[in-house]
Length: 294
Image (cartoon, rainbow, N blue to C red; front, side, top):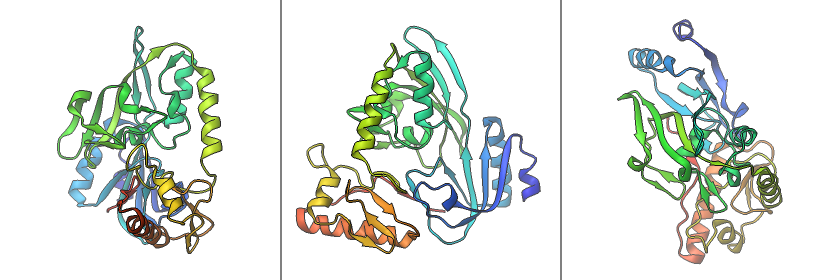
C-alpha cells in the first residue's frame, strides 16, 4: 500500500502514525496510514486507490476539535494541507484560499493586504476548512458571514462548487457532510487595516481561556444567556477529573489533558458533565467537539 500511495503527487505518507502527536489534546492511538495531501489534483487518484483496496478513511484537519480513541485504527487519515492564496477582486476584496491553511495564519496574512473582517476569530485553532465545517465564531462574528462559495471533494460526487446560499449555517454548525472535504473557499472581505483588533482579540482570548492541551470548548452554549462553561461551573464541576483529564478551573467548558489522559477519561468526563448539568438545570448539553468514527 505504501508503494501505491507513493505514486500520488505531493503526498507525505506516515505509516502506523501516532495521532496523539498532532492532536491538540494529545490523545489518539496509531492509525495505519496518515496521508498529507498538498494538491487537490491528487484527490481523484487517492479515491481510486482507496475504493479499490476497500480502505476505511477519515478526512481530518489539524485535530483541534476531533477526539480519536487510543486504540489502533486500521484505516487512513487524510489531512488536506493546501494553503494557496489567490486575490480575485479588489473592491470589495475577494480572495480564494486553500482550506488547509490555519485560520490564524490566514488572518495574519490578510492583514498584510489590509483585508479585514475575520479579526474576531484570531486565535481559534484549526484549519480554515475545519472552521467552515463547524462555522467557527467568536465575539458575534462567524466565518459564514464572509463566505461566497466553497469547493468540496467527495468520493461520491468528486469536485463540487457549493454557493453559500446552498449551505445551512447555524451556531457551530453547517450542513456540509462529513464525507465532503473542503478544498477551497472564496471569501468576501473588507478593505481596511484592522491590525489593532488582532492584538485586542488575542489579549482577550489569552485572558479568558486556559493554557494546556485541550480541544477548546467541549460543549455548545445552549443560548447566549446560558454559556455552557457557566452551567458546568455552577454544577460544581470545576477541577473535577477522571484520570488525567480535568475540567479547567479557569474556564469550565475546557477539558485539559494534565499529562497522560486517555480517550476514555475524556469520554467519561463528557458524560458526567452532561448528566450533572441535566440533573441540576434540566438542560442537555450538546458536544461542540466531534468523536472520530472510523
